[in-house]
Image (cartoon, rainbow, N blue to C red):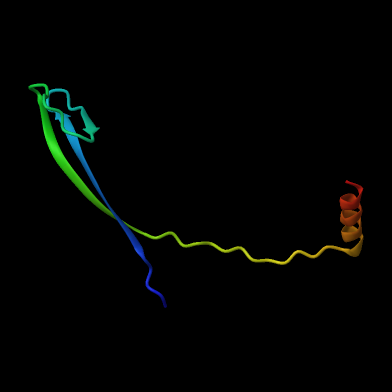
Length: 78
């Protein structure tokens, strides 16, 4: 059995929490100035996901002789 490859990705961001209102926001870069009631929280997430499997569809298509003749005539008429 082959080992499944995994994709690892690191996400770095900041959560700005307003402790007076209880609201928070997520930003990519830390701003120089915050409101006095805001706290900056550095957040790093390392996410590991399995690599998605490639699906392969296989099948057979059978056409009747009449259908093949009809398709051939349509091509010739164009």
